[in-house]
Length: 200
Image: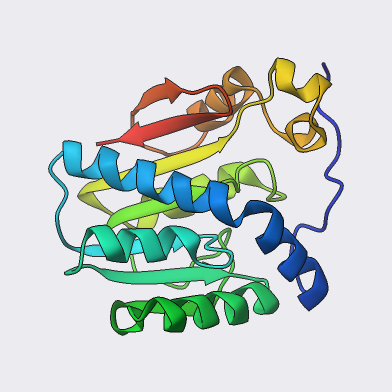
């Protein structure tokens, strides 16, 4: 099935839209955060600085903070309503001391080169206007010995039944995009709903 255009805005700047997105996706994105935390633990990560590039309502940062109490996490997103919702969820989770959320553009990161021990990007590759530019920025701000994790929806047979999968890249399309970016070599892992690109 051919990839279709997004049915939602690239930037969630409406509070009602943001809350609806949260209600529909909170559980699955939290599970994604838990899965990523396990991958990191299995590969020796325990502490450091983390950037979540496109953090949304902060479900992944919250899971990272739960799994790794000593990390410092910065989450950026262009959607102010999502960031506000994320701050509320962080406060409820009582772990706000090591998570900072701020407005920021994943295609134009404000951070210095080699700033982060880990850069995470979840469900953003198919959303941004220029995915190669985003990947180049992620590579720029990750430390040379740091880790990068990208995960996104995998457009496969599920697109026949679920609207959101029709807007995603297939794993093969995503790899082609990654190959033309500056992103360091990594390994690809695939689940039923997603693919991961892991630079460890």
